[in-house]
Length: 336
Image 1 (spheres, helix red, strand yellow):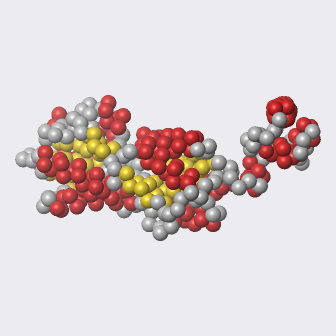
Image 2 (cartoon, one colour):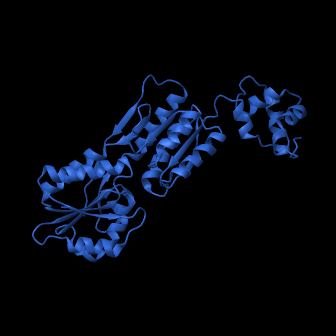
Image 3 (cartoon, helix red, strand yellow):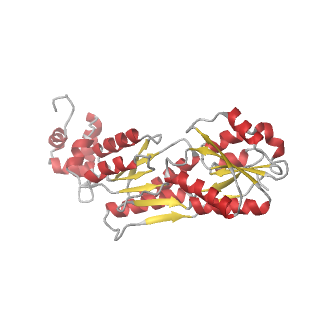
């Protein structure tokens, strides 16, 4: 036994009457050339001793662990859940498992997860980047691990990323609503400068306003927190009696909260007051009235990110790959 009193791989090998290499092959699933009796004997001893291999020690001797580190900015929303599902389904089909961390868009937390996952032997990473993603990328590069960013565009020449056409999707949706009759425009969202996703969504809105010769007013809200009274007051005070008003919410997490803040104005939707935001598909379908949303192909985004990463791990990528997927719009009752 080891100094801590736990069984070692050497103990298991001696008890089974085989070499340490044979036990190592068994633990790593390389049993195709192993006799049924040997497999059965090793399995029985492992179960009897409750042996658990030292993952960190094993990874020192392995070229691959078939583990992928996945770090999500906010694991609580439906978009993230679908991303993870897409990653997991693709990874499983290609013989990989995933480790998941929730960074809460905090760079220190993001780096901490990366370091821990490296210790566990992650072969590569799929990351929804924080504003300080460059610090994290340096850690991964120093370990020669491949990685793919998703959701946000990464401004690094050697980066792989998968994202959606946030700018174009926003521009087209707002342009359509202008043609439907909205003439007064409000944007309620968090600081747009922190993430490239926010920059694209806010730019799509503001460029559409400018190109149509229209003005707009905006209210900046705090990340993860909304003052419902402030939102309701802002919208009420800036509604136009002559033209229908549209409220655009670029942040996925903020849409349900903004909608709840505007409940006192519910009777004005959609003729006098329209609402449009991003994702929240299931919630938007059950709200009353149902909310129009720009929808990202989250599951496909996860699939594509996993495919690109695994191709890197297995060295089948011939060139850097950047993927931009198209969003769709679920037109519903909250807009004309």
